[in-house]
Length: 198
Image (cartoon, rainbow, N blue to C red; front, side, top):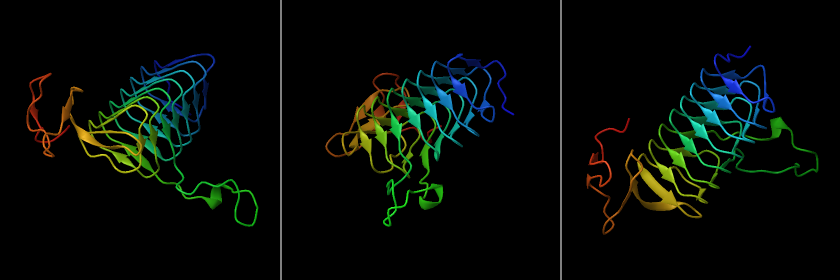
């Protein structure tokens, strides 16, 4: 049975009784949360979001409208996922086998995806299977992420490529002469890079 202490679930949302919804989280209209999905406390799950079977979402995560999180996705605390972000989980997608028979769950291999604490994924980005996006990393809008993204790294494009670094406050820090930014963040004044991202 799911825990739903102080959770706000819109009447039009479809939430499995086998899902866990943490305290203070909001599930907005027309969202679907499948069996065994785990959503932490203080999360906002926007309109028309799809959370698949066994997806894990940490605390204080914001998932904007029309995001699809498929089986195999784990999202740590404090992540921002912009509207229309799509996670994929099959490296070799096919509807049928070579002999023409329809594929079943037994015919595909799940490739897990991990989004680490504090990361931000821009609107309309697509995350390929088996990717890890590092702590406080930022993915630009419309990007197609085909490789792991390091902690505090800023990537954008198709395929997504490094543009520089990003401070935990959100300020983008461009590389200078092919060297990574080192110094004080111009927005918050914190030393960059931090000794150990939290």
